[in-house]
Image 1 (cartoon, rainbow, N blue to C red):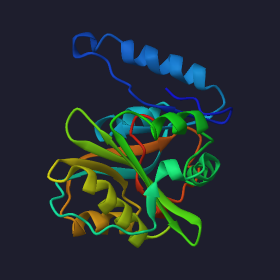
Image 2 (cartoon, rainbow, N blue to C red):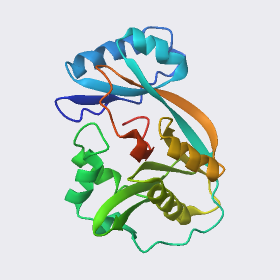
Image 3 (cartoon, rainbow, N blue to C red):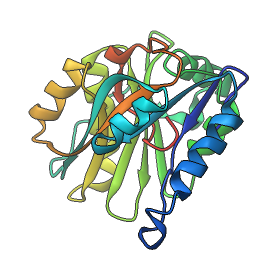
Image 4 (cartoon, rainbow, N blue to C red):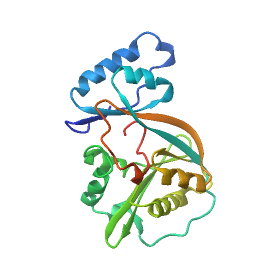
Length: 222
C-alpha cells in the first residue's frame, strides 16, 4: 500500500490466497491498513463485486474505470514532437505528473519510468510538455500506464508511438469512464473492454482532471 505523503495513500494488491479466504484475514488486513492510513485520504480500485463492502468501510464511489485490450498491427507515423522521457528534465516530468495525480510521487515516478522492459515517451510542443505515457511489459502482453495528455490528439499520438514498440502483441490500458474522449479513442482503435473497477476514496474525491487521464498508472498504485 503506497503512502505518498501526509495527506494521501492508495490501497492496492489487496489479495488473500483462495485457500485462506473466509477466515477473516482480509478484514484484519483492512483494519490494519485503515489504522496505518490514519487521517489521510485514501483511494482504491476495487472489483465491482466488492464495492458495497468497501462502502461499508467508509469508501465512497467516484467513478468506474474499464480495462481495454487490443492488438495493434499497423505502424503509426512518428511525430517529431515525441521524444524519449530520458530527454525530459525530471523536474518537468514530476511537475506534469503532479497535475494529474493526488500527491507528489517523485521516488515512485523515477523508478516507474526507468523500470526494465519499459518505454517512456513524451510529446513536446512549443517547448512545453503536453503529455506522456509509459509502456511496460507484463506477464501477458504489455500495459500502457500512465497515459496523461492535454488533448485527445496528443493522447492518440502517444498511444500510437508506444504501440510501435511491440506491434502484433496484446496491449492493455485502464481508462476512467468519465473521460469520454478516452473511450472514443478506445473504440476508434478497436479495443475491447475486458475488466472494470470502481475507483473509491475514503475521504472524498480529490478532483483529478479525468479528461486528461487516458490511462491510469495502475489499479494497484493509483
